[in-house]
Length: 226
Image (tube, rainbow, N blue to C red):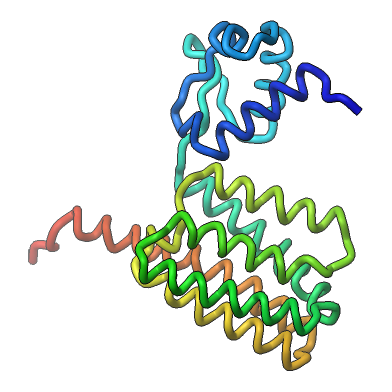
């Protein structure tokens, strides 16, 4: 079934945002888009309203549609939700993950370590997402998996990774990945797996909060004795 014009515009914009063609803060001008892609302005307006509702863009008075920029609050709320969704999905998936799945998870985690050594944050991010979605992939609940994938996509939109924003978090995350695979491989209770998967995501939130607090303290300078 062919996509409607509005759906085509939506896919163009969403892909452009995800790939960085339309970076955070980028102004999406309808007339310019219409000329560039040969699609009239009405479908672009419909797609922008949809993207606004989904949190991808912001309609700013006298400026039009602007791609949303990173803020710690948005990232933290997304991580909090993802922790709950992914924890449950991983627990449901765990008994169905095959030996080959777990081998692939360990391979992905090892490659993440290599990307750290090679100072390649983009590849680290791709592999990290693949690792997490793999552990959720056997949960046999299509809606839950769709929710998890949507939140991972939202994280990519936010354009900032706690692994790089909080020093040392990336290496700690790799160790937690190994621990999570160990639990699944050892047939741990689903509640234990769910808690471990949820805690893993929340540890990133904690790391960022602690790092920001430290930066704020440093910016304020030493406290003077009274």
